Length: 111
Length: 113
Image (cartoon, rainbow over all chains, first blue to last red; front, side):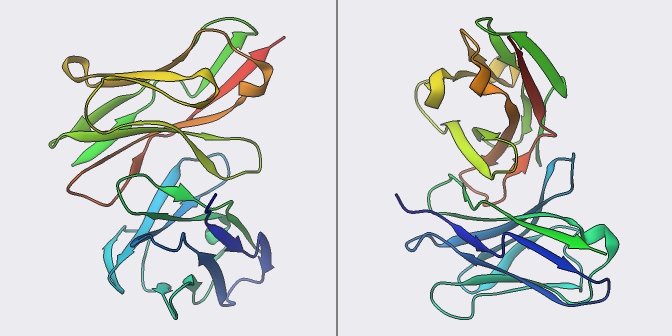
């Protein structure tokens, strides 16, 4: 069964460092998403991506964040200068017809 | 604008008892509604969804939910809880015109032996 894969599963970084989280969406999907879940809190929308550009983004997705689809398979989330409050689980998702398929998540810990 | 409200951040039931997790939505367009489950240290897995058609939808692991437009609700039920049902459950809404999913704050289900 096709699935969304994310790497790394866990990353620890120092405050101020750049982080790139990688995702491989399901191959025939057209819509890609990043969501964030701070420990014990709800799943929050960050950004959606379609046709090689951002289609929607939330207030959380400020200038420190960027997304890219560098080739036909990967979808990356970059945090330019991490802050303590960026510590969270980051979920990538993809969809075609209204159902989101999520990856297992990348846990980011900022020290 | 769309949103979901999940009443009860924590629900405890005895093994074998009925599970009822509540979700109410707000949407200015016909909604698509979803329930996702998150087991500890895992990602989000789709339990079931409603898009159009039959308002009672059945999902995996014996769960079902009923879309009630008059009550703007999409409550999740299971007749008999199993220990393996202990997890976090999230209700979500989107629409056929949007591509952003809005999640509720989640309900943590505990099953007591």
